[in-house]
Amino acid sequence: MTERTHQMGRRRLLATAGVSSAALLAGCFSSPSTDSNGEENPNGNEGASTTQETLNEDLPYTAPPEIIDLGEQGNEVTLRTEPARHELVEAEADGGPIELPEVWAWQADDHAPSVPGPILRAQEGEELEIHYENSNDVRPHTFHVHALEKGWEDDGAPAGSGHSVNPGESHTYNITATPPGTQLYHCHFQTHNHLDMGMYGIFRVDPADYNRPDREFFLTVKDWDTDLSTMMAGGDVEYSHRDRNPDAFTINGRSGPSTFHPETGSPLVVEEGDRVRVHLTNNGYEAHPIHVHNHRFQVVEKDGSPVPEAARYDEDVTHIAPAERKTIEFTADAEPGIYLLHCHKVHHVMNEDSYPGGMVTAIVYEDAMDSEHFGTVMEQAGFDPEA
Ligand SMILES: [Cu+2]
Image 1 (cartoon, protein in one colour):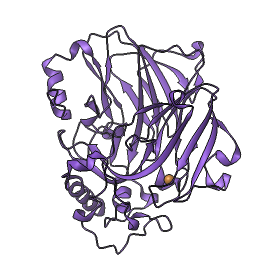
Image 2 (tube, protein in one colour):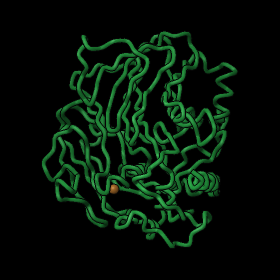
Image 3 (tube, protein in one colour):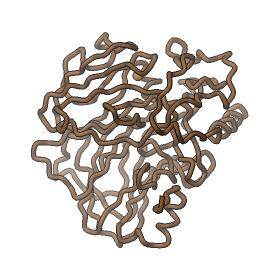
C-alpha cells in the first residue's frame, strides 16, 4: 500500500513534467529511444539512471484519431508505428497536463500518429490491402483485426501465424471487409505490452445497405496502468503485469475534462430529433458499464452482428468487456442540454484522486451551446473558441 502510494506520487510528478515545446506538435519526428524496447525483459529498464527530465522529451505528441475512408483511397492504407508522448488530460484543461510519457501510436499514410489509432472504414465485401511498414520503430509489430476474413498468415498473431513484422520490414495484410459491423484492431506482438502502449483502434465495415444515422460517433474506452508507459519511457518504475493496476481511464485516448474538448476530445454533439449511433469498443483490460444520462438507447450491433429487433430493448447502462464492440442507438429527444455518458464504475471517472475525470464525456445539444454552463465546460476542457 505504501509502495503504491509512493508510485502514485511519482506519477503525479511525471504527469506534470514539462509540456514545453509546441514545435514538437509540428510533426518533426525524432528517433525512438533505444533503451525503451523492453521486449525481452518486461522489467528490463532496471538500473537505467533516468530522471523525469530525461524521459523522451524529444518525442512528438499524438493527435486525435481520424477516420480513414479506405474506399476513397483504393481500399488500401499504409500503417506505421511512431513512438510518441500522449496527453490524457491536455495542458490547457483543468488539472492538466497528465501525460503518458511514451505510447506507440498507429499512423495511417501521412496523417499524424494517434492513440487510439485511426478509425479505418471500409465497405462490406471489398478486398483490402493493409500495408504495415515498420520503418519508424525499433520493435516488431503486427496488424491483427477481429472478425474480418483473412488468410492464416495475415492474422497478425505470431503465436498462431508464425509471422511478425520486424523493424525495417513491411507486410501486406490481405483482408476481406466481411462481416460488416464495428470491429477492432490491435498489434498482436507481445500483446500484453503493445496493446497497452496504445496500439489499438476501430475497424468499421459498413453493410452494403447501411442506413446512416443523423449522427455517428466512435468511442473506444480503455483503462491504463501508467507505470507501463513510464517504464517503457525509461523511468525508474517497476511494472508487473501480474499486479497491473489501472490508474487512468480514457475515451478515445483522453480523460475528462479533455474528453469534452470539441476538437481533441469526443463530445457527442447532436441536434434535437437526431437519430444517434455510438460505436463503443473496449480496448483495455477491464470491463466498463457505460451509462447514458436521460436517454434510453438500444444495443443494435454486438461484435459486428446486428441484434435482432425482438432482442432489443430500451436501457441506459450497457456492459462492455475487453475487445467487445457494441453499437448503441438512441433518439436525441431529451430537453436540449448537456447529458453525461460515463463508466459507472465511478472510480473510473477520476484522475487519480480527483473527481470528475477519466472515463466521461457528454451528449451536447447544439441548442445548449450558447448556455453559460457550456461555456464553463469548454473552459474546463481548455477550449478557447476565439483561438
Ligand atoms: Cu506492436
